[in-house]
Amino acid sequence: MRKKIGIILGLVMLTAAVLAGCGAAPGGSSAASSTAAAVESSQAAKLTIKMLNVGQGDAILVQTAEQTVLVDTSDVDERDKLKRELDKAGVKRIDKVILTHPHADHIGGMALLLKEYEVGEVYDNGMPSTSKIYIGYMKELKAKGIKRHALKDGDVLDLGNGVSFKALYPSAELAKEGATPGYKHDPNNESVVGKLTCGAFSMLLTGDAEKDAEEKLLAAHSADLRSTILKSGHHGSATASSVHFLKAVWPETVLISCGQGNDYGHPHPDILARYLAEPKFTDRRDGKTKKTKIVKNDKGEVFKAKVYETDKNGTITVTTDGNSYEVTAEQGAAQ
View 1 (tube, rainbow, N blue to C red):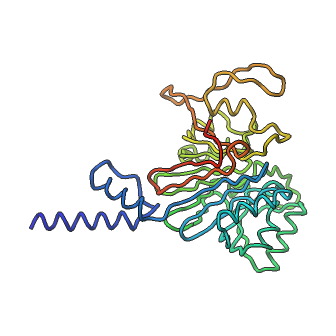
View 2: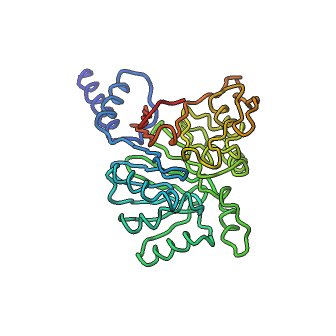
View 3: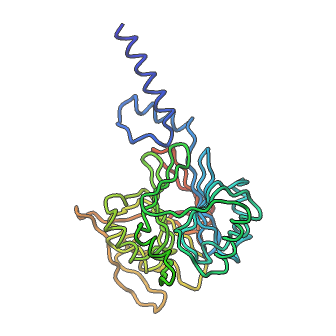
């Protein structure tokens, strides 16, 4: 009788694990949980994230078995690249578009999306802009009857299969101020920042958030920032990725979206050295060797991550079942 009960309980546990998909919490190291993880990995739908190779702009494709989401849409002059990448990924419909902020290298592809693809809903920070691109796509959304929503701290989007996107920024207060006529905007530091979560895996998406936004995130969410992967803020600029912010996030891998030979020098050599825990770096701007601000935790351990760049690696693909993850690049290897 005990043997029969044990078998039944084992089957119930295994079935629950399979049904949980990416929503499964990190389990123990028992044989039962190992078997469940193996079944989950082979049968449950995976989360796929692609940082698309679209030059200097941002475009991150998020796919579950239920939804296709695009975070930012590259620049106006990168629309052909964006279409090529979306077509390569087999995209026909985009259920959700998340626009982190209204700079052209993040919203420049909206006209293409609205013309060539079926778009479900659009999310942004809710703040108005005088940008012609912004005004144009807002008119198009209204003409097509596509709903637009504002994201603020605490909002959660269900992407299916236990995958969620939780907005951590902007705060409700900033969102309210930013919607007030006459408010002086700082678009980079009004970027939507959110955490994409699938089981034990997470990726922090930062738009072009700089140190000012990072400080506010640390004040409000210091315990929630830890993530498996970090999307480098502002294309790897020295205006982002502060020591305190990296200490809180402590990612295993960093992804950088930037154009080959871009005029901004992204990623900046000091930030790249910080990610790689290199004590010194050569500044491309003046050729001088300088020291790196190394990131350490409270135990004295040094932060060091694997780094991928679209300018060197092409489109970067992350796949996960919620337990483990894999990063593959079109070309080259991680730094």
